[in-house]
Image (cartoon, rainbow, N blue to C red; front, side, top):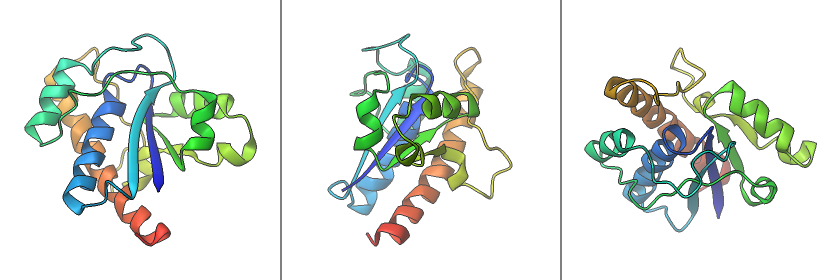
Length: 159
């Protein structure tokens, strides 16, 4: 089974939206038994909290239900457990690089938007302090990258 971890700072906006978008793609493709998705945060601000209501509403309008998700913090064990650790921005990429227990496991860490090379952005902006439009933009970005990630996994893991 291929395992993917989406990572942002608090695990209540960007990373759960990415997880939800990717899980929706997996369900539609019948791949939930072959690819596992999860999300976490580099910081401990919101452990146990559900995703932001604005993010939940945005995701639900696009067919991704985030209701069952709860924020958690990245652990050292995640580096060995996940094949892909996908940071939403460079700050979280740096946090993950520092947290990584080894250079080999650090190689699993990259920016999520690397899987959407057609987009001009390399980072998913944090919508927390903005309005609903920011959450819509995040969903646009994570849906594009989720599709690119799924295509990559299918090709590289022959799924």
